[in-house]
Length: 267
Image (tube, rainbow, N blue to C red; front, top):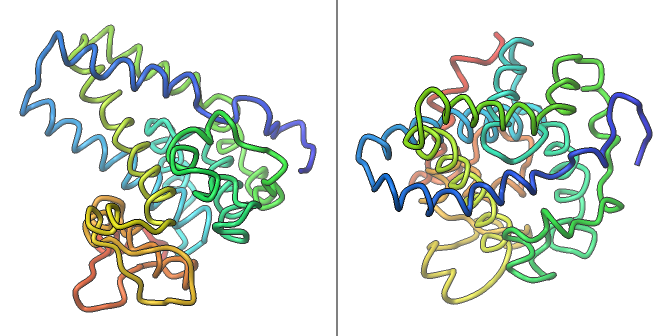
């Protein structure tokens, strides 16, 4: 772990407090305001923006694996959107994914390996992660971008400011459906990939219809999880070739980011 005054990995490293608000707030608020088709559509749009564009395309495919190049203002905007998914600092996301998970997938050196327990890989690792397993050197080049550094240092303030604005100007409805619910779905799907697409089990095999194209590589593919996560659910394909821009390799697979990246990549 390197030391840098701009990047303190121990400061607000994981979104523990926001996660508590999400998983307590969603059932409580929806109990009082009810379930709304309009609200679900709003949540679907916000999920696409925060998770699909922000996390999966902006942070994962661009910042982590450099699968495509884009303009600086688009990179910064996508990093900002990723914060609203409640998955924490974009730079810490990069460090966890490329500094721990990929080089040591499914081993004791993997920060959220399911061999430490499915619940640990699904959610508990946010509280119990061992920072010594993360190589923060992979974030060094992004310290040159003052906006990314700002987003790292203030990601929790940004997230809560967004939620407060929703509550003040839109009330519980907008807080639930444009804030908490899309963030909760984003965190849950990340947990599904970490826990169930990295482990064996008959129940999860039936639920997620898991399969492998590359038996020598870790991870499993799930067609429908791939549709919800801009291809990330095609996880065995991703681990086989992490730098690949699109993770679909068979005729029956589809990576939805094919519909987005051509419009934002630098030509």
